[in-house]
Length: 127
Image (cartoon, rainbow, N blue to C red; front, top):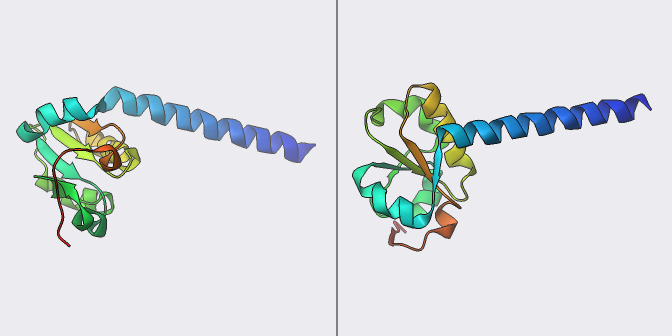
């Protein structure tokens, strides 16, 4: 019986943590539809946070690749005074990247709803 209570408590903690992250991310990072994203990304810093092989297979025209795994080391490449438009494959990594940038003082943070897999605009491939 103790194992069941322990599992329920653990499950409750995981759910609470997930809900906190979800609402915190919604507060600091604005999710944009493709049309909204398209309307503003040319005036902003467009960052693809996917890994290099994903970026080379296809990316939004004009995007810079700063993988989330390198974000902390390469943060100086992103200006804090300009809007930052982030995207990844599905929206999860760009959300985490937005949280990391927010902690370092970036305030104008946006990401693409559904990520690159939902993008229907122009793309560029390197392969």
